[in-house]
Image 1 (cartoon, rainbow, N blue to C red):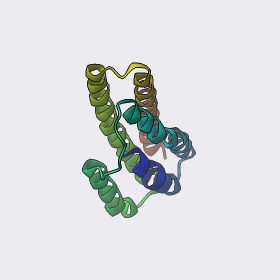
Image 2: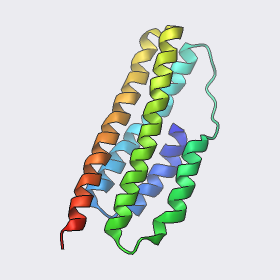
Image 3: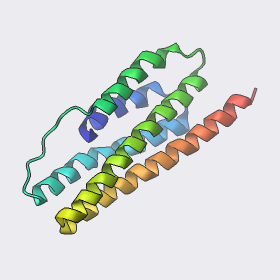
Image 4: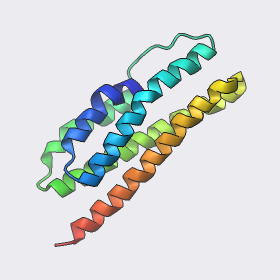
Length: 145
């Protein structure tokens, strides 16, 4: 999921948004997300497992829905509200995954590698808070003439 976000989803989202604040939030999280995959690789190797990539159906569905709807908005401000909302849904999905990984990690005694999962999760939480803030700001802007 992190690699798909890094190389496909977030760059596309960054190109699509018009709001400077939202674009900055996406760009910042893109840079963070580029580090998430290597951190996860380290965690898997700490467990003696080889990391592998496979499609995340939830992310695939969100991306397909986004592609389908993103060109249908009559106003860039409405489109950015949608982009921020789609990003927030993705972040919530990632947070749930990190919560599960941390719980499993506790059972498997990850040792120092646990901090890498915690760092990824913290960055996802920050991204969600920033997206929610941008969503609120965009919604207020919609009310302005």
